[in-house]
Length: 249
Image (cartoon, rainbow, N blue to C red):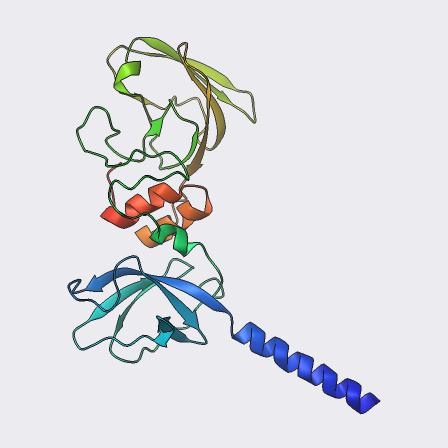
């Protein structure tokens, strides 16, 4: 009886080890060099399993002079080339599940995105669109990732003189500022902290709820910023960063 129990225990242990060792995770192609006739394309999701990268359920192999820069779940990137790849030591986070597929979705220019509310087909200099996706549209409830400098934006039809009331929902701290006529943008009031959930009311318009998430300074690369944005409720901004590489403050 002891022998049977011991065998069962060993079998269970082996299966557990095999299962944990066989965990698969996603990695994403950030860039193909050259992009023409590439084996893998920008935005394509690959699979990492047991130290091997798979493409269409086959181990990935790149022809001569073809390279691919890929993104792991911890924000690190590496450049792949050749038929076989020697991967560096990967962190546990790099090998864990992460929402990279969200970043690869809807990357086509002008594709409607419903996860949060960023304008599609942004045109720099067009008065009906925000100059950058970092700006906070006061007419729409949304979660927005921001940098140190925060600027509020309103659409042309709202550009009359009005009072803007900002209320921090956690502390109930409130501030009222005047937004002059014809002005599209307004600096975030210095007295109001930047991070958390706010009630925003512009003039007689319906109050909106806006959540600000401030990017940590330690995020050095665009890849790290993109993953942080996805994890903190800003997938559309992350996709824009992926599409254009970077955008101005």
